[in-house]
Image 1 (cartoon, rainbow, N blue to C red):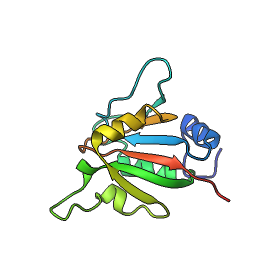
Image 2: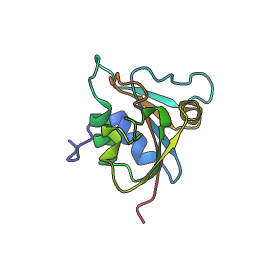
Image 3: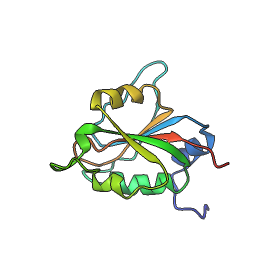
Image 4: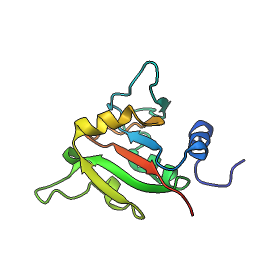
Length: 134
């Protein structure tokens, strides 16, 4: 049995196979996932409303994936000051760029995989760009 945090075999295998610049999307329960030829792999972790949360899945994924850059939708920013949402604000070690939700959905088509969580917060989606460890 693995000793690291991430136990989901399919997700762990995907992360192990990612190269520099590959994209992985971790999304809420409502994010449309492309289908058809050339569509990204779909890893559906959603069990019920809120389970697992986006924050929980990001924590597990980031325990194994070296991230160089990330994208979130501008619509996810909170308050009048337009600050990063809680599930994003605590993430360190990489830059987070805000793009429109339409642009984020377009990036889903270029992703290696889209991970669906049980998160039911609007616009709670993050596109992670794989980095290198050297």
